Length: 208
Image 1 (cartoon, one colour):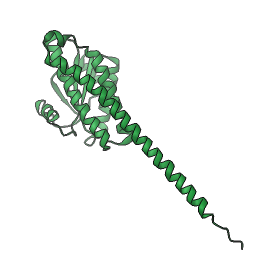
Image 2 (image 1 turned 180 degrees about the vertical axis):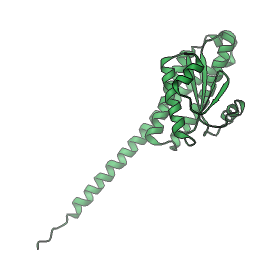
Image 3 (image 1 turned 45 degrees about the vertical axis):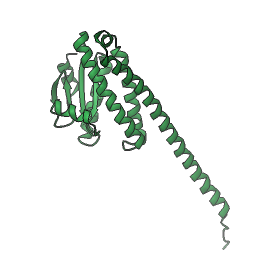
Image 4 (image 1 turned 90 degrees about the vertical axis):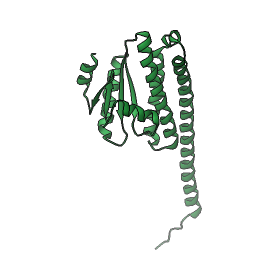
């Protein structure tokens, strides 16, 4: 029987190439994540400054806020967060940092819209959506899909999604204010609705 000579160098080179490809791929992925997070944080800060400027100024400035444009910016950032959660996991350190900042932006925008409606007579319908990535996860995801569909069809319906799993005093205050006891829950024009609501039910409540 002829013994096959194992080309050790060939196997070592193959292994090194494989490891190198994996390492480079991981590093590139890491850089892409950091780049997307950095870009999203920059846009988030720009939107936040516009919102805070409107909140801290007299009525005239508040009414000059382009609520629709700010909502489009916030919506784009939210989709970036969702994309990163899917690609790199909800426990990724950079993703968590972005998510925490995004939640503060959502709350700031919600506060600005409430003030805008009160002082400027806006006709937007405000929906707060409380969800979790852990508790009742499937129901929460389905509720989010339904709300997204309603917003796409009705741009004057503004959805503010709140992750109850984020440890933040502002989120805790909202949960206590509206007496949210389970997820998913939605608050429509100040009234709490607990549990999953299908599209028809939500449209009936909102009046679209």
